[in-house]
Amino acid sequence: MSRHQQPSSKIIAEVAWMYYVRGMNQGEIADALSLSRPTVISYLKTAKERNIVCIRIAPEHYRINAMADALRERFGLKSVHVVPDEGAEGEALARAVCEVAAHHLPNLLQPEDVLGVSWGQTVSFVSEYVPDWPIEKLTVRQLLGSIANPLLSTSESCTTEIARRLHAYCINFNAPAICSTAELADALKREPIIREQLENLRKCNKAIYSLSPCTPDTHVVQFKIATEDDIEDYRRKGAVGIIAGRFIDRNGQAVLGDLDRRIIGVDHDLLRSMEGLLVVSGNFKRDAALAALRGGFVDHLVVDARLAVLLAQSD
Image (cartoon, rainbow, N blue to C red; front, side):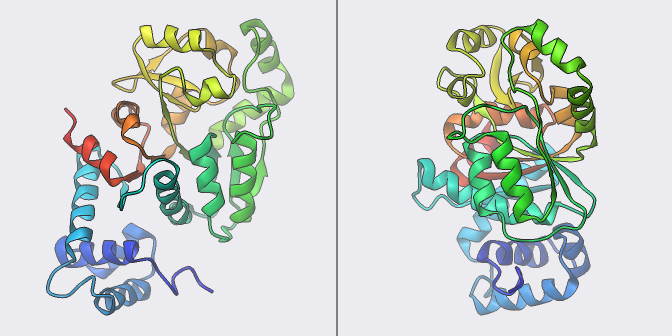
């Protein structure tokens, strides 16, 4: 069955919003959402059948799309999906956001793209929901080295699952994510195999990741990449968020410390150069998400409605 035979009300409402409220024509909508014009026409018809469009767009969809437009315009983003919370919290809310992101991901990808994949629970949830949708000559690369714990949402497990579902060529990163000393990390980075893998990360033109606040319970502590003392050191230097093991301040600028020399993986500048899809939920991630938006790490955003309001209202 085609992905578009039973489209969600979310994508139907977005097409209706763009056509009836923003005044875009069918060709412009097709280009913006990577759809065919016949699909756009079908979605507009379905919008009426589902009562999303009567005389006006249903209030809930209007509010959600207005918020998405506001965030897109404020932060100069290419796309924004705001997911209604409908009373959900915690993991249930995270999974709702991740499911939307997972079904949006194939629309962002083109044949011969190279997708970089980060790690953590959010990216793992996304990997569970990605549809079986082959993309020709797609390569999926792991952005960070390996963590020796099969029970955690590691970069290699996320990368492998996303690649499997998109029928892509999967390239895992055969190196430790973190070394005990900077000297050891430097030595490993000079090894031809690891040096080549680091250089090939520059081929990634797109990336999917989440982030976490710079707090003692962050996932980088849970994954034993950092200690609570490490986190406190970065906090004193102004860090508010962590992306792919890298720390950023409230303006999205790099905050450097001892861990940066010991980590083997993508760095701030390389991650910023990719077309990034940020998947994030939970009000406690507001400062970290704002930092990523201000720092130019985000081109596409999938976010829950409550967090979206906080981001839109922030100074």
